[in-house]
Structure formats: C-alpha cells, structure tokens
Image (cartoon, rainbow, N blue to C red; front, side, top):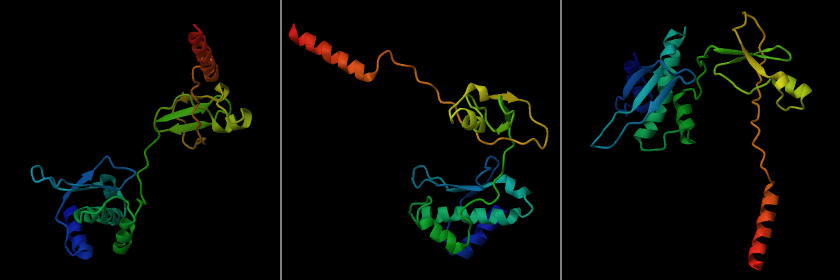
Length: 203
C-alpha cells in the first residue's frame, strides 16, 4: 500500500524525481502521523532515506486519505533533502506543501489515555496526568487562596481512577523547589572578603 501510494504521488507531483525510499509503518507514532528520516550519502556507508507512517491511521474510517496526505507531507521533506536543500520546516517547505496540496499539521493525532489521577486536598477536584507528577498543587485554589503561590493545603495527591463522567481540573502549577538559604548574602560575602583583603595588606 505504502509503495503504491508513493509511486502514484511521486509521478503526480514530482515527475518521478524521487528514488524509492524505505517505507515503514511505525506503531509508536501518535501525535505525529509520519516521519522522514534522511539517508546517508556516504559511499562507504550508504543508507536509504526512510518515510514512516503511523500505524493507527489504518484503523481510522477515512484512514487511506490520512495515509496518503501523510506520505505526501513526508515526501516534501524528502524532495528537499534529495535536492540537497534544508529539509526541515523552512520557508521553502510550506511553499512546496501548498503547491502539492498536503496538510502541514496532523488533523487526527492519537490521544493517549490518562494513566494517573490526582485530587486537590482543598476543593477535591480531580486532575488527570499521563505521567507521574510531584510537588504540584491545584492552580485554582492556589490562585484563589494563596496569592498564586504553591501551598501544601492544596497539594495534589494520587487517587484511584475516577468513575466515568468525573469532572477534571486541568491546570497544574508545579511547586517551586525552595533553594537552600545561604549563611550569608552575596553582598555580605563580598564585603567580608574586601575587609579581609585590607587587613592582609596592612600586615
């Protein structure tokens, strides 16, 4: 499927200019629908460029449309690399993208399920998170009752997954880590050093 689409798009938009790259499905892609990996032009260690397409697109009702658009998007990166031009999102990139009619951004990113849930000790609202969080508090309560500063009263504590339909509180401020207080202020340290220097010079 990928190879067939590549040949079709290569002929349609690039006059078959592009050699066939390595084409692969990638099950780890989620926010990105595809990825272009440049090859190596080193004659001693040549390597084909690669175009990867997110596996989850196959399961979408209109998956073929998104797969086609993703391949075309990555082919724009490829054609720039092939022409030895900067192949990132440079000013030249959107011009070619527009001319071939491909999207710049993925319209169907795969959303990952929340693995962790936290609850504010104050208002009891729930906060979902995909990764573990530490030293965080409820932004709403901190702003309302603590002048916007982190407060242990509104710390987020881990809880079991809530029932379906529970209303989450989405904003999470990270608690600032208080630096260790110095024994002396920097200005006092400088002053003491100057005094010591004067004492030494007098001797």
